[in-house]
Image (cartoon, rainbow, N blue to C red; front, top):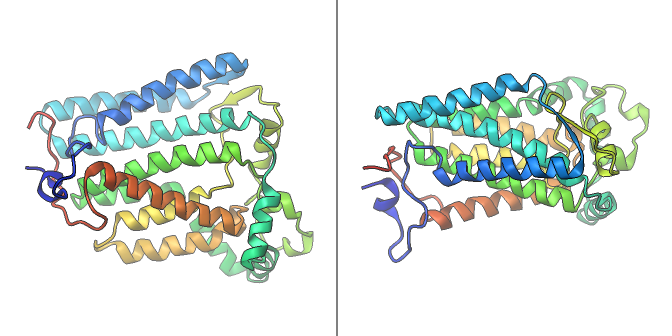
Length: 327
């Protein structure tokens, strides 16, 4: 009996299969990746965009190797190793697919939504320019926060590995599910409500930027503006950047990582570092407060969706053991 079988709510049909090493986190997730690959290929061809793989061919080989290795490990009943290998492969592959979809979808060219988000911030009493000035007046503290903000990718990988080391395989699948669902939802919302962010909208005076790094919060604009204006001619896999402001994906993943390690020995260290990441998000991500609040809503939606599909309840205890499809 699996962890889901043991603790599923009575009367709830289990639509989501038990934890399995085969094509972890779930075979359906890999099918979606395959479908998305063909959708993006057709979209690129239809849009007349030049696609440059660049050095990403190396990463493509790595992902292919990991998928093959995962299948062999699962076949050899080395479930724990297979779960880790498939997890790494899926996060890399799906993340890159979301990068490409981000560029393609933003080229639709919906109207800028910055004025809406700035108005929402004013209604909430949030003064972004005052926060920016505060960061500028505390360059040493701002520097530490900036360092943590840039650790998102490392923290995401560390979260997955930590869950694997602790044997939290069901929790790892939940974490990857939330990553995938929120990533897709973020891309869709970002395409419908594109925004250049706070630096783009407020154009802050140079004196309140003097002690801050020159790139954070606006480095992506050199990609976003031409893409949004219908000038997307090339997708270069070596030069992709995250272009979505609303909702904030940094906020989503900070919450997701903290939630994933709940009730474990690493919860408080992760909670502390993710809190610092959240503090830096408005300035170093160029985000409105409304971006972050929307990110929280998207995270909660994905978490609730996972538990709905799994026939579980939020916070339910589980034994977190891997089970093969054939068992």
